[in-house]
Length: 117
Length: 258
Image (tube, rainbow over all chains, first blue to last red):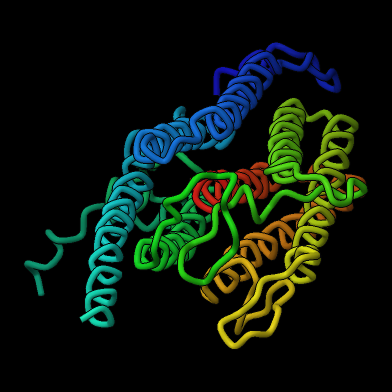
């Protein structure tokens, strides 16, 4: 809310000057992270580094999500209760994804054993 | 019944019956400090997160169920025995036929969507300042980038469905080109199914967003929000638009990068 506090001091009919510095800062952070992701996608191609590479991608994705939700969607500046209302169910969802991805590996393993024996 | 009066917290005298009640249990305090509309948009977006979360969960499980390609990138060929490497599937660019440009087009799409997110916040910021002309300008830019993204996705889909020139020899000996819901030349049938469902669902969201933005632009031009005294509608639709961008960030990582 601090981004548009100065409008109170204006005369009626007058329009405040845009305050867009923080928007462009967030934009460059998002572009920077995306560029870094591409650099990693093309430089870390060895199959042995797959786990490390994917972990970096996931961390960067969460970082980008933090900037989009926190700054662009303004959640960082909302009431604590609203922040937790959104974050806790989402955290449970992340747990579900992790649990079923692990489960997927076991399903694949079980199926390959079923046909190889 | 005499005792029950103690359970009524703010039994106002008759003279004040019309005045709004402001006690804690009368809805007088706002724990979230957000307007009704914005709060409901947040709850809708949370439910939409579950929708896309379900897609992501299904995708994760199915992908890990299938084998991983273990060879070198150079020797890679399409096969339904393992999940395809995304760089080998998505390597075309409009107008540059036959060139191997891995992920170049999806990089462009990502940039378009990030740009549209920025112009959207700029529209919201202009709304806070009650600057009608600026709101119109930034809404138009957002509509433009949204439409560009949708057109790019249409091209991406048609190329994915049409397929690469060489095709892939399937188990029954025929050569398969492109993709449909039953079979595809890139890998296991579920690879194309998930591509269609996840990017299709996301694209539908972008389309709804563009439709809402067009409506917002018309309402802004007609002075609806100016008369109302605030541009909160732009803020609420902005939340939706950023959410769509957010979903793309995840689709991009899990479908194209990993």
